[in-house]
Length: 513
Ligand code: BES
Ligand code: ZN
Ligand code: ZN
Image 1 (spheres, rainbow, N blue to C red):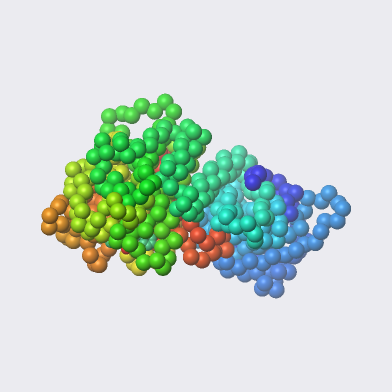
Image 2 (cartoon, rainbow, N blue to C red; image 1 turned 90 degrees about the vertical axis):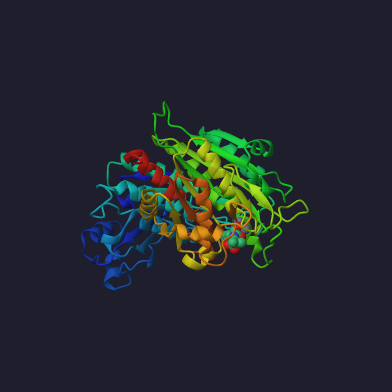
């Protein structure tokens, strides 16, 4: 998709359709309406007067203005007005959703080129402070809106696409162009993560996941190291290798590192590590899952995919702080050699774990990945995982659960998420919960019973983050969407990529302390 930023008047962009958010309370003869009506020949005024258009969130009014005939008139033929709700509540995250919804709607009309007016900034004119974030979010929204999960269909595929997007910038265009570029980078990174998640386990093995990481490293100049079985054995990663035993696909521990150009780490400089569960298929292992919905377990690598997506964006945005990405990748399969309930494994940090249920494998592979991130010098850890079914019960598909030992990190994650339209909800992690994961014969057991399943999983991980500042995100409910939204297809959501990129940008700007 070609993306332009234009400071031309809305009527002179040479696009087939114009999409414009419309706020509640905008009147038929308001300044904005009048300005636009120079292009649309009073159509908006009459639409508002007829109460066809009220600005209610989610509302869509589509007007076909007619062909332009043979003239070279740059006037758009179609106008899509999208309800944006109250102006005071209109944030960049709304612009993203509206732009995505507009793009999906107009694609359905076989429109190839659209103009979008983000209407950011305090007076709805994209020229003042904060307008850049609306421009970035709009581009991102259109890119996310164009993602489909039909790549393996040979018929009934969505073949239509928006080929050109023009963002209307009321500023001088320069900041707008930079913001649009950032929006493209982030949107493509989210879709990269969604694409990995959408792949079936047959194709998305740990080896392939490592190859995809290699692709990012080559293209965007990141350091990469992929640990194979032998090296993981030498590191003492008995928990990760225990999970991998039941699979013929060799496990990989993928490590990506972004370092700003000319960066020299000062004594005590923070190093943030993003650690993502990359379980490419979770059958449950010997504690086999029921058959119903087992196909969904191809997306048990969404945490890892989010880390790869975030690293891909970070490599292009080039923030002024280093970031480590660590993805333990394995299958969880039942096999004659597979780990069995009752087995004991020893993690890299020396702690012994009694494996009561082989289906609680995510925490096992993360235990060693956290250990390795610490070994590489991480001072702050954020892990992401489709870790528990319990979080789906607790928070549904709306909020990500966040738990951890560093309240500042947790607060920053919640705030960074809110800015990009992702919701994070903190669950408690009192030390009492740790009793549930004490084993009779080893240091720990890998399940804590029915009570507080998401919390006891986090309590388990805490044993491996140890005293390093740490937050854990359980994305089992939010990584996948069962229904399509106006702004996006159903399927993988790419949850957490945008939050992580935003968080890193904030830390690079304001410092981590
Ligand atoms: N990958 C699953 C968690 C999951 C469940 C993700 C549903 C997405 C949707 C994880 O490995 C798992 O199986 N967890 C078990 C833990 C239990 C055995 C303590 C669970 O939540 O049932
Ligand atoms: Zn499992
Ligand atoms: Zn799992």
